Structure formats: C-alpha cells, structure tokens
Image (cartoon, rainbow, N blue to C red; front, top):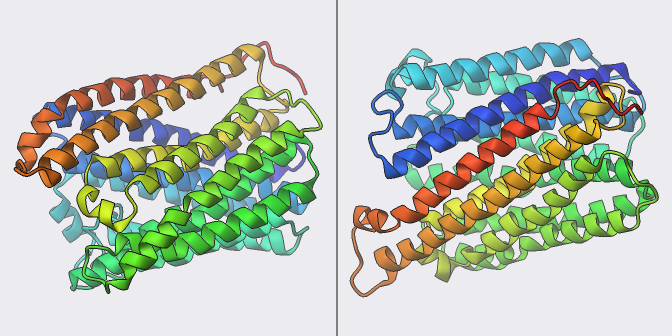
Length: 457
C-alpha cells in the first residue's frame, strides 16, 4: 500500500458490509410481512422494519463513499490524508449515531422517539427516508463537515486530478442538499417539493458524480488505460448526469400541486436521464476492451463491469419505464416504483461501493489480489446478488403492472387490499429471490476472511 493513511478506509468498509447485512435482513422481514401480515408483530411493525431497511441502506452507502474517498484521495493527491485521526474519530461518531438511531427505532414508538430527541424544538422527523431524529441529523452534518474538511485539505494541498475534483464536487453537493432535510414546512406541497431536493438530487444528481469518480479510479488502476482517455469520458458522464438529473427532479412534482409546466420539464429531462448511464456502460466496456494489462484482481473488474450494466438497467431502463407524466399518472406509487428503486440503488450505488471494497481491501493487506479460491467465492457472490436482484426487479415489475391495471386502469377498479391478495405470488417469489441475495452478501463478506494461501503482489 502506497500511503499509510489509506488504511482508515478499512473501518468504513467493515461497517458498510455489516450494515449491508442488516439492511438485507430487515428487507427479508418486510418481504415476509407482505405475505404474512402478523410476522414479528408487534415486536417489529412494518413501518419500523421499513425505516431500518431504508435508513441502514443510506448509512452504509455513505460509509462506503467515505471509505472510498479516504482510500483513493491520498493516492490521487499523492500525499497522506490531511488528518487520519479526525477520520477515525468521525467514523465512531457516525457509527454510534447510526446504531443508537436503529436502537431507538426498535425499542420505542416513533412518536416517543421524536419526543425524547427534541423534535419539537426543530421538527424534522416523520418524512420517508429522513426519519432520523433531529439530533442524528445534526450529528450527520457534523460528520459530513469534518469529512469534507479532511478530504478537501488533502485535495487542495496535493496533486489535483479530474477524479478527485469530481468526487469532491459530488461530496460537497451531498452535504449541501442534505441541509434541506432540516426544512420541514407545514404546507404539504412545499414539504414534498423540497423533500425531493434531498432524495432526488442525491440519487439522481450528486451521487452520480461520486459513482462516476470511484468507477473511473478503479478502471484507471485495473486497466492501465491512459488517464486522459478516462477523464474525457468522465467529463461527458457528469455533464449529462447534472443536466438531466437536476431538471429531471420535475418528474416528482407531477401530482403534488406544483405548477403544470413540470409535467413537460419533468417528462422531457427524465426521459434523457438514461443517457449518462448508457454512456457509463459504453465507457466501462470501451476502457476494459482497450486495457493495457490483465489485472490479477478479476473480481474487482467484474464488479466494475456489473456496476455499469446494472446501473443502466435499473436507473436507466426501469426509470424510463414509468417516468413520463401520462404513464406515471397510473403507475405512481405502485410496485413498479419499488422495482425501479431496488435495481437502481443496487446497480448504481451498491455495486460501486462493493467494487472499491473488492479492489482496495487486498491492497491494504499488501496483496494485489486475493487468492484464486477467494476470488471465485467473491465472483459467485456477484452473480448470486446480481441475478437475484434481476429476479426481484422482474417480480416486482409483474406485481406493479397487475396492480396498475386492476387498481387504477380497468373499467372496474378494485380496492387496494383486494389487489394485494391477487399479486401475492409475486411477493413470495420476491422473498425467495431475497434469500438468494442474502447468500450472495454473506459470501461476499466471507471472501475477505484471511486465507493462508494468499496471492502475493
């Protein structure tokens, strides 16, 4: 390993994998509650399981992004991290806040949690994905500011590259847009309008810059292709991501009381949102086809390729399927939304975090790659997770199409719960696929356990 301070990333990667397992377990609990309504009730009600599932997803991805930054920035900047001690301190603050929040979700009613954490002083709770207590949100801001300071000082006092500038821009945007989680107006239209400034402008805006920079860093390392070639691709990808993603926020404004012109703006620019993901797919295949070396870490190359392909499928194709206003009028809030959400998050963000973990962890152990047997295990984990996620997406798509027709489009629309009974089979198949996905996650974690037969760099 070139820079000693890169080892800070290990803590973040370890926590990310642990929270990933927690997220999937609570996803399986929710899946069973769809078909067995009283499963684990009242110990873990559905709304609590959902909060833990979605919040742990956000936290472990943020942990992964931070770990990726702490690993790649010193190498790109050609200097040690500005303050490794600050990075370690903020890790424990972030992890402690996350664990205490989950304990709060599971141990007391949500209204009680709001009361004991001072939500009445600065009301921020009660909104989807932003259910964290106000005190936790303040902690996240403190962690984010310290993180940005640490990374920013490292970048500014070292070599500047396109990868680090794009990454820093994405991370800065992540922190800025999170501040809208503190704005909780009484007017429901305003609430939803600004709520999407966090949720959409994260996942369909600044997070895409983080994704592209991490993927570019790994591809530079594993292919040996000239940095200038990869940087040109990177410029095109982030330009298209920002142009389409920012104005494409309008596809969330169709039915909340915002001005009618958002139906046109939202539809047109949302229809263009698959373009940066398609360019990313071309980018990855082009770079790997032109590689100047055969990197021994075959698993990391596989994760990188998978990121490009599945991000395009989930964020691009499945997003486009129901983004136009006339279509969204019928599909909004159905299982089609869940299908798109699962594949998009997995393809774009889960896979890129697993890519950098796969590449970086062996190097932090003094190896260029893991042993062949551990790489085979890791590649099995890729295929189990990826194929099962494809099936989860297909089953939810089937449920969503049937739900849309029976509940909203047919001449005799049926009640919500009547329709839910009729799509029950899709939910069972989704649950089975989820179990296979968990096996893939466990294999991924096990593949990093020490092996006596290591492949030395």
